[in-house]
Image (tube, rainbow over all chains, first blue to last red; front, side, top):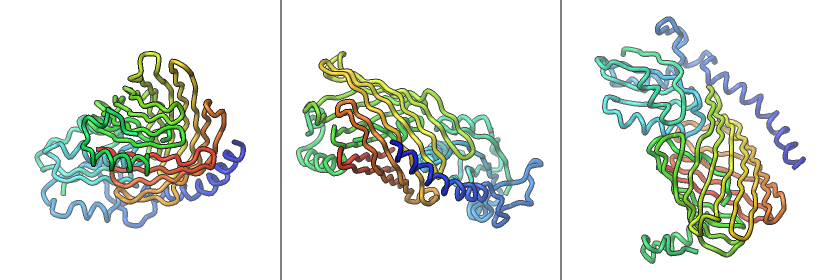
Length: 137
Length: 213
């Protein structure tokens, strides 16, 4: 048991520093490929710009909800979210950015995007939606 | 190996293939993701030196799951089923982590004097994992407990849909053998499937396969 803990502490120390660096990048602060200068409702848009550009291809005239999700730490979480939203017929397109902790959801321009409904859907999967930004394409 | 529980619904060739499948990948009692998203189903196949089992559960909500586990108990040389209930007692989501605490219970087809209950928990980020479990089993002839601790590191961070890999160390104690075994475990995630493989000289293969749908 003693060796077990020692081994983990040693390996953990090495990886924690690597993780800190990666988490920094995940949060969109590496100043490359992110829409740092885009403001939505007075807040900076924190989304991977390359990913966002791919997502909005063919979505002219639509609107995209960018949802920040906490607790989305693995593929199973992401897959559950994808399945939950795929049942919603008003959803035109969906992308789960596991690294960025974001879910991008495209709706028609006339759709009234209800954050409470999105929160409920994310919670039904066991995660929490913490923020919503809406962009008209 | 496969008793009447399976024989009733699976054609003979199916039984043969399921038998081979269980032998190949067939248990640890630690269960990654014991509750699915609302409306989700999960199939788990497990095998270790003590038992083989096949477990199906359905989650009406992300808070609990209900299911049936068919067990081939190698220690007691017995076959039985459990009606199982797992309840999410507590979950803490943060931007980069999730922490869970689960209560688990099961009642056997052998009768009301054969049941188990326990608790297990985990904390994970996309890089680190830690988990623990305690399970107390009561039978007509013997009561015993099992405990485990599991720690892991992802050597790389995969994107959604990639193959995800975890390198882990697991320490497990079984009152039946009264031994702690510590051994390496490797875990793979891909799409809806997860496979966890561990090996120790003392308890041999410790394998867990899971498919969510």
